Length: 122
Image (tube, rainbow, N blue to C red; front, side, top):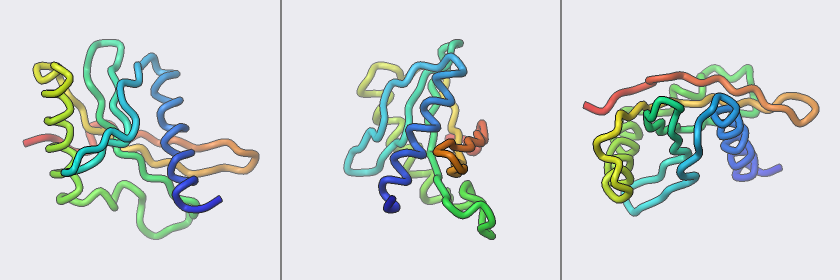
C-alpha cells in the first residue's frame, strides 16, 4: 500500500469513528486553491468539526502525527474552513478544529486517536 492509499484509508477510518459517535459527514477532502479540509462533520449538538487527519504507519516514530500540523498549516485550515462555512451557509455555526492521529493495526484494523480542539481560530 503506497503512502497516498494509506492516507485515504486513515481518513476513512477517522470518518467512521466520528460517524459511530453520532456525527454526520458533510465533506471529505474539500479543496480550494488556498487549502484542503480532510473531514468536515457535524456533531449531534450542531457543532461543525473540521478534522485534519494524520496517518502514520510507524507507531514508534519520534514525532507524534499531530505535531506535523504546524501553525502555518493551522492558518490554511482555518482560512479554508471559513470559506467552506461561508459557501455552505454555516458561518454562524460553532466550529471545532480536531486532529485525528490514525495508525494501522494488524488484521486491517485502525487505531484512531482524536485530539479535540487541537487548535482554535483566532
